[in-house]
Image 1 (cartoon, one colour):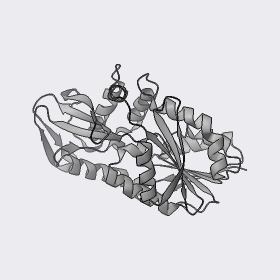
Image 2: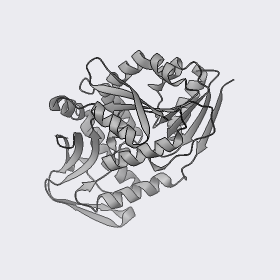
Image 3: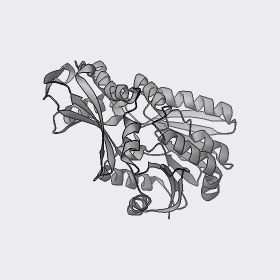
Length: 320
């Protein structure tokens, strides 16, 4: 019989405290920055779902293509009895894995959103009557303690979200994931790949302007939560390819000189005309680079799968 359990490892006020700290730090530095995790309030999540359906935005379709084609191989390679998904959200793509893992006993979705975890968890136990679901309300970038569940464990980090971390942050994150794994456990990682600049830029600057609205939504989040007076129309959406770093940067560019007041932080922030606020880095990867980062974290990459067009990759790395 299925079971559904939710465990909170984040304090009730952790989200507000983290937002305050990120805004205070990011808007007082040069260049100004805000972390991409603040895109995803309810409206931002709706906008992102629309982005995944846009013709320009290939990563979601490409990753799903790989999961559908390779889920049985992933199951054979891991024999997983526990599946842990970091940043699980709606758990939509994970269903391909759940259906393919014959020995699966427990699914552990990890997300900061209690509502997303509850909605997805209840749907999954209805679909999989013998599955135990132990949801964790947690920030997986801040260190994580997993519940006691049967091994082998498969940790899945999908969607190319690893690219939102800077190289040093990725190294720290991957090392922390390694501490969760015992020998024979595995990490399934989704990575967007380096490709033609125009394809990459179009994916982050679609013709319909959905990504622009998504980018500006971070300003609405700061307005609502901290009483700021950002006017999103004062900023232009910018998506640029950095060929040296091999990442896309999303920025918001001030259309004119302006000052934004943030009463909750007793802060006034000046923007020069044309000054840019960086809201996201999305790194793109090559196979050798991923293999090297896995090795540095103490993991051995054993499988590398791409979609037919070679746009996106899933890799499987084992703890030895």
